[in-house]
Image 1 (cartoon, helix red, strand yellow):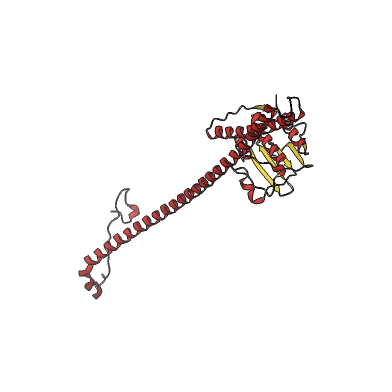
Image 2 (tube, one colour):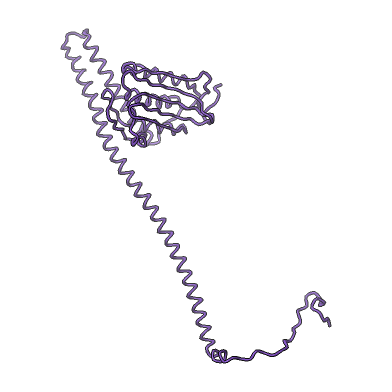
Length: 325
């Protein structure tokens, strides 16, 4: 028989070694507690069950707190959404009232001047006065047409029916088209309109009609709020990451700092301290600019100082810039 456990064959169990020496003597405390052992065992079991239930209850309380915090966040978002909806509803109400006035004024002018021309109070239709009336009819009709076009564009965008016809386009050509569309309005107001583009500007993948709409809206706003002998600059360049930046800068009355965050919101019209030449608007132009820029993945930036001017930048990403074949 092997004497050492290490000498036993594999799989053999350790031999039981009898314990020698004096056995511990029972104490008085042990003898007194011996009848209470079942009770103590039950108490320990009850304590374990209580601790387990307590831990479970703590976990449930923690879970409820998390759910309450989530509900509070959802409630806060709902309250913010409700406030935004109320603000937009108020803006729409003000917008409808403003547009009603804007449409009624040119319509009254068109009807009035047309009646004067029809009645021929200055003689037959050869008098120079009729040419003045026809000019006023043309201007008021164009103003009304611009408002109607903005309304139609907003309706198409909200219905998701606006179309994009994208192609590689030359930015200098787009800028020159915009200049020709606005230069007459600028010259009539005594404003100098300047276009600055480098000769090696790369092509832009865009909807050229929508980009013209963006720039014409910005230029029209600049003309509207720039006094006589002012200056408007329409410039384009490449940025450090390879994108194209188009800038419209004017020397007009500027925008109050507290209104800069809302200028691109729909149905909003910035109330400046004073308007140049009594110009008004529908308040849709800049919101359309933002929507059309988003459709081109472009970002908008605006800087303005009251009585010194405003600069709006449209930054197209490098993914839309390339060489025109």
